[in-house]
Length: 218
Ligand code: HEC
Image (cartoon, rainbow, N blue to C red; front, side, top):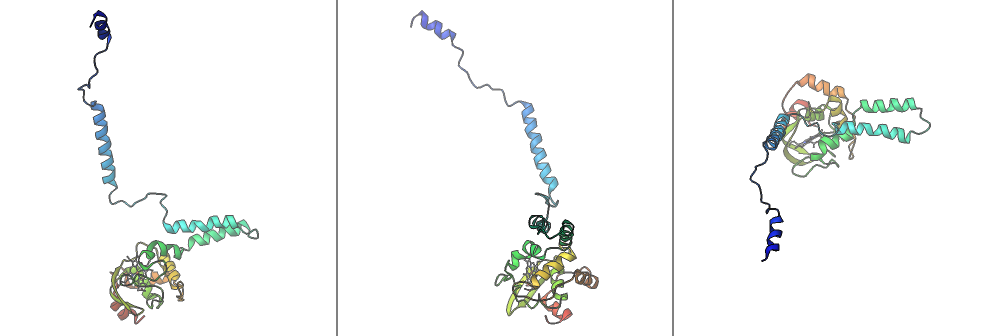
């Protein structure tokens, strides 16, 4: 090693090494605040209704569909004024089919056949097409216990829809089911649900036995 080599060495910057300085306090405080805010916000939302998305129910979404269809297909013969009136009446009357797929099809299936051994069929069900008082009672208050539907036994729990669906919605979904899959029973008027509530008030779920005692054989 000669003199020149040493000079070159002295010109070098010292070898870098990792400092011992911890993350700045302000960053730690910031992270802590974000965690507290995140967890706090989550905790604060517990038990509140989920209002994600555009907050429309399936029913509302389906009701909007005919509106746009109106304007698209708006057969030239129809005056705009009547198209507006049409969509207004459509909005006033809930869409039974949309309510069925949102509220009932998970159990009774889209084709109304139910699930053997678990959920009774609505297609060809004597209970559904009986006097309106019976299906209204079932959907409004719920049903549990042993039940025979078109010759097969079921024993399960059906939730009540009073409080979840409006009277008009319950009437619409029942009217839909009563006229689908080969069923051909009369439409149900929302007034039938009102009458049911006036007669029975707030009560627990029905059993098939009780339905027969109160309303007679389906
Ligand atoms: C969580 C599952 C579930 C949902 C959702 C459900 N049901 Fe039911 N439903 C049942 C079960 C289970 C029974 C039989 C109860 C029993 O065993 O006593 C039943 C029975 C019925 C019956 C009488 C028996 C028959 O097959 O006709 C009708 C009518 C009925 N449901 C209509 C509806 C309508 C309309 C909706 C939607 C508004 C609906 N159900 C939603 C589970 C469900």
